[in-house]
Length: 509
Image (cartoon, rainbow, N blue to C red; front, side, top):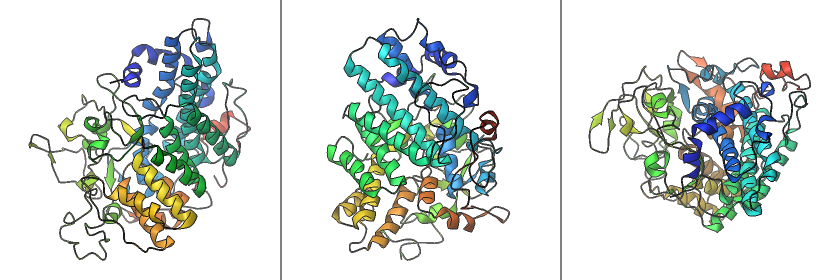
């Protein structure tokens, strides 16, 4: 099996090159000089190109927005509370209550800074790869991979900040001091990069190689277009993936998110790769010991009963035992705080969380119970899945329904997700109106992608955030807040406003 990206990223020499060439400082405009990797000693061989390519990918590994930042978005979305052990994101719980300022730090800074650090790496690669004596075919593929990564970084920026400064070439500190482009201009660049990636990436499966492929770029394109309300474009991009047949749903929902099930996984379309002993995360420490994320009752209640009806109408629902007759994804996503873990051997192991859950629940999704008992020596190597085939199916279902109503292809897509082996939820009822189908699709996305960081983007684009979030009450009776006049985007970090006089703060911050 080719584990190129996993193996090459853990090479310590790569990290040294990255630190030297791309800088490790917190603010994008305070980067180290960008010309160091362009010296006469680099960009000369295939190995140089491979190192630089791996460096672009590794921006995802070193980003604190990946994993902790992603699951923190479920706190903002109202599907979870922040645990007693801080996420290290400057109290995401405070952000969730509407206190979001340019000086808030945490997610407000991390998404911005880490995305631009990734963009800087991509721009440097694209500006120099033509100097390397490799075949045109290899060069085109490498460019396609880096265009995909740059599109991913710019899409995150556009979703959280709207219009942002747009750089497609390496820039000096002074050259970087520009006014933001419009959101439409940034999204146009994202789509242009993705089209370049689609044209140059191989049309193969993803998971055994760790390199972005054509399907990865099409899946991201479907998400980008869905977020813009371009129903025809989103449906077309998703349908290309479906028609190509390179990906399929995996038959083990739990292991989809664990290392044991991620090798050659047909559902994973792009992920952040980890591999022990040198390239690891603290995922199990943070989730299974520190208890940084407490799922809320609202998320638990969103899971249907096994008859396909919501708990409010199903005769199968037992208020005194919420676990009975429920969508199997519920217990594969959340667990009672008091429940122990049962390992594959049958051994029952307690979690020993650092603090009590504020909601009575903890995640079961993403957690490797075989790693218990967890301590600071625990090294997690499960990959963080950023794109998977189930999303493509639900992207298609939503876009097609909005475009022309619930035809047979819409039913086929959503029912395929529900019928995953081991989940086996019944088909949704026939004869639904567009509005009824929309409601079903929205809930299907919520339960399928619970605690994966997609919910916040969904409720923002559906314009639900301004009504749903203020309806939530946190421990102590504190009501959450979401001001539609400003909270659909974050403020630019004050540190960036201070060093770039041309950057205009987002409205009402």
